[in-house]
Amino acid sequence: MRPAKLWRSMPVEQRTAAAAAFWHDEQAALEQAEAVALIARQIKFRPKSVVTLGVDKKARHLANMAQVSDLLAARLLVAYHLEHQRPMMGAFLDALGMAHEDGLIKDEEPKAPDAETLDKAVATLSQAYPKADVARYFWTLLWQDPETWGGLDGRPELHLA
Image 1: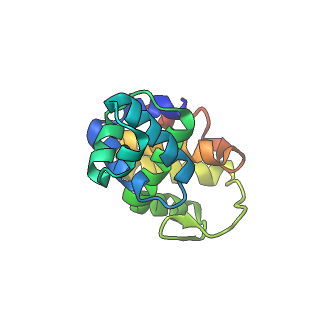
Image 2: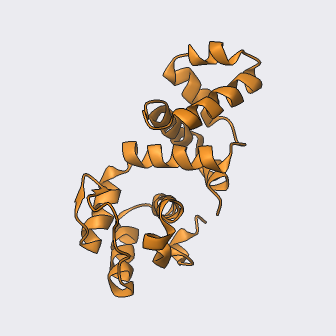
């Protein structure tokens, strides 16, 4: 599933939460510029005027956009997870036995977990969190680092419905 399709599948409340987190992400300048241009076109404002809007207004406009690029959608999903899904991220890494700090892996180049460990961790997370949240998280991991998380590919937990 492409990031933009996953974005469209999210409930508007979650997209709004993701968009608010995105506007606070200091590492998302490129994607924020893209979002400003999209919002400006949608509401027929100059980009300069969109920049001056409050975070809540920009988040609402962005959340109501179904058509965004994969690059922008992926950044929105990462921002969402970092802001709103840290406990789930930490629980998964704990189940894998990976060192982390509040859900962020400490190792710069993490090793792919073996199949048995991954199976157990996936089962643990799937029992503890809503199916759609787990699927979104696993897709986000796959996009970010397919080498480390390739073992998630093809799993039934990736299905949202």
